[in-house]
Length: 335
Length: 117
Image (cartoon, rainbow over all chains, first blue to last red; front, top):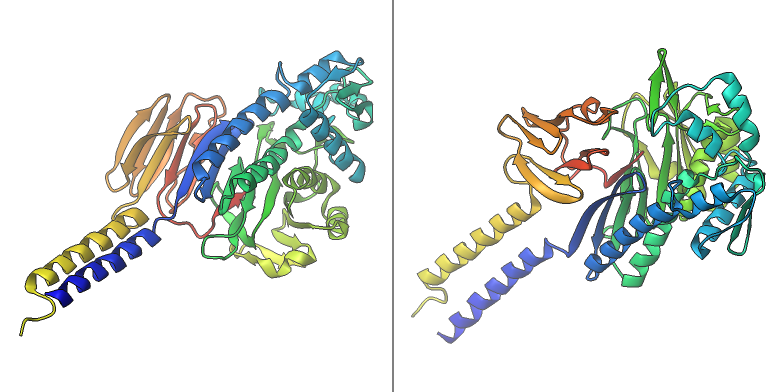
C-alpha cells in the first residue's frame, strides 16, 4: 500500500505538468484605432494589464495625432500662421517627423496634407486636375513647419501637417515601452500591417513575418523574414488605393509631384528597431525608388529594407540576406 | 504479493491520460474542423465551425461559409474591400471590414506569425 500511494500522485503530477506547459499565459486583443485594425498577442504574467494600457494609448494617439478636429495636428493646421500649443508628445513626434523629412530630402514629408486631402484616398477619392495639384504643391513643404518647445508653427497658411505616415510607428514604439514596463515575455503588435515584435518567441526562436505579396490577395505573402525585437513596416501600392478611368492610384504620394509615386516599385519594407523610423522610411524609400532607396538604406545604421518591383524581383539590403526566404516562386531574390 | 499498481490504478491512469491528451488537443485547436472566430468592435460575437455550409448576418455584414472557407458575402460599407477580399481558408489567417469593425480569424497556426503589409 505504501508504494502504491506514491506512484499514482507522481503520474498525475507528470501529466498535469504536460498539460500546463501547453498553455502559457497569452492575451490576444483586437481593437480599432489609427484608422485601422490593431491586434496584440502578448505572453507574460502581466499581459492583461499591458494589453489594456496599449489599447488605451492607441485610442488616445488617434484622438490627439490624427488630422481630425480636436487633435493637436488640427490645432496646428488651423492656427497657422500663428503658433499652436501642443502636448510634449505631439511636439516630440512632429520634430522627429521633420528630422526624417530632412534626412530623406523630403521624400518623406509630414506636411503632405494639402496633397493627401486633395486626393482624399481614405474618404471620397478622385483624381485632381493638374491645376489643383500645381496649386497645392507650394503648400506641400515641411520647411513651412517649425517646432519650438511646445509651440508648433506653420508659417505658410494652407500647409497641412499629416502624421499618417509616422503615427502608427510612434504608437508601436510606445507599446514597446509599455511591454518593457510590465515585463512581458514576448509580444506581436500588428497595427494594420505595421508589425512590431517584442522579444523572441517562447521557444527562443525568431518571429517569422510574411511580406505581403503585392500582386496577391490578403493573407498571401511573397517572402518570410525572421526577426526579433524590431519593427517591420511595409508601404505597398495594394493598400489604400482607388481606380479611375482604368488606372490605379495608390496613397504613396511623391511630395515633389503631388501624385502617387510611379517608379516600378510595388512595395518597400523597412526593418528597424524604431517603428516610427521604419514607418517614415518605408514611405521615403518607396518615393526615392529602387536605386536611390537601396543606397540610402544600406548607408543607414540599424535599417534594413526589402524592395519588390513590378517585374517580381525582390531586392534586399546586405544585413537581411541571411534572414529572408522567398516563399512564392513567382518572385526572384536579387542582392 | 500485491502488484504495485492495482486494476483501479491503471484505470485511473488511463482516464487521466485521456483527459490530458484530449485537453491538449482541444486547447491547441487542431482537432476537428477549422473554426472561424468573428469579432465586432474587438469582442468575440460568434465562433463557427467551417464544416457545414451556411450564411448568417453579423450587424450589416453577411458571412458565407462554404467548403471549409468563409467570406464577407455582403456588406453595407462604401469601399466593399471586405467583399472583394474573397475566401479565407488557410489556418491562422484573418480579414476585416474596417468600416463595420468586424473581423474574422481562422483557428490554427499559420506558417508566419504576422504579415507585414
